[in-house]
Figure (cartoon, rainbow, N blue to C red):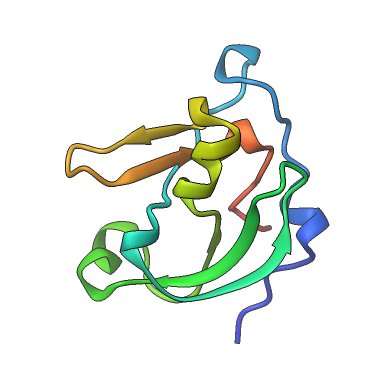
Length: 105
């Protein structure tokens, strides 16, 4: 069992842009890399906040166990500048631009 904290705590990042001095926090967020997706809340931009697992072929690269994040395809509709594509063609999200901290203390 893993505690993730409240959605409010998870979305208390700085917002803004990388040029504002934020550290770029890129995360593999393509819906095609995820399974067991559960929507647990809503971001102020209207996109979902999710718990999920990476598919087996992505776990060693992007993480084992339950993960917290967004779906790049949703982010793309409201903040396209936060989405990029990795060398394998999967969508990544700059979580700092969404004001989301994926690293809970």
